Length: 448
View 1 (cartoon, rainbow, N blue to C red):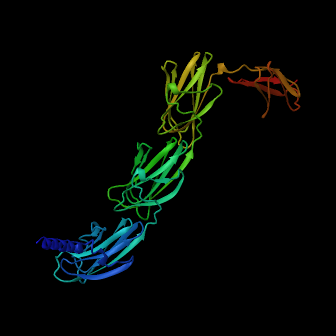
View 2: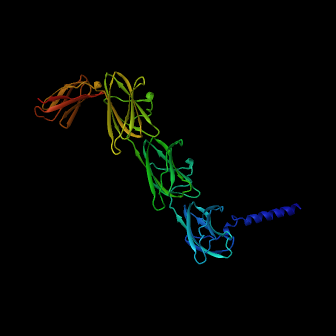
View 3: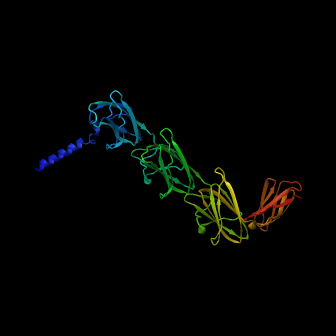
């Protein structure tokens, strides 16, 4: 008895396996791209044709029916409907056939074209369809569906062609920046909508954008944005918007910035020290470094002059050593194509002061001057062939005659003698000295 039941069970299992559509997949006729298929259907007939897709692209099928009862569908390997021509042949008759077209982007794999009749027709009717597989010629590397699988690209990357398909709705790209700079991302969408996001290495969003309205297979919608970023690893996530599928291109361009600030300088305790009258610093406000601080030691009571070159809108605050605000000013950049100059002056006493720069991302230049801290002008006299005088010991001395400059150095006692080309009597000569506190105003003398 046990043997009888075991035999029945095996027979039933074999019947189920043989009868299943997956088990019979090899029996379905395989059709080639561009091939036209003709056939007839009766009530509730279903016919499947196998389509082998070897590269990412789209399957396009054009069907012609001589009856209103034809349903034509594209199925995946598990016979799930991807896209279909449903109720598209409602006006078709034996003497007035109707032709319809549909397509869908797909990944490599096995697919099926299904033709069937729902049973609302009493007689056989003819149908015809042509199936075409079109290669998208993608250059992305799959799988890249998450940050851990992200495709590595260069900071300056030539265009990569990718696609969203019925079964692939998200792509990730990883870009590593070896220094701070401007990362420009250019996207071209050959579909009506898509979504782009930029993340840092911790997957915090830098920005997201989706305004691609109007893109099509033949006419791409282009958008590009630039981001000032610090050294590090970043991710670009490109996502399907709702059910829109199609191709897109991604390319990047990186421009290093010429900032020479010393990081970290993100607070009063980390403020970078700059010397008045001597140093000029180029700083960068980036997405992940939104504020820079500088420390200025003023050795003499006088006027603190702050000069800035801005390329985007910036804010500046000046604090005293106790952290009290002496100045809070928004610097508006009036032009998108050039830089703006800005300056301010504050009467200050001897002490320590702080300058904070923040605001829109981008470069800026900063220098600070306190005229009272400059070295005194040298004492000098000039003959036809040399300039002599006294100033600070072991310091650089510059002689300017017209547009020409001649330099020398004072000795340990401050004396200097600098040879010059033979000059006419009464020629004006300008002499200055440079020390660790800056460059003095010039002393004007005449050749005797």
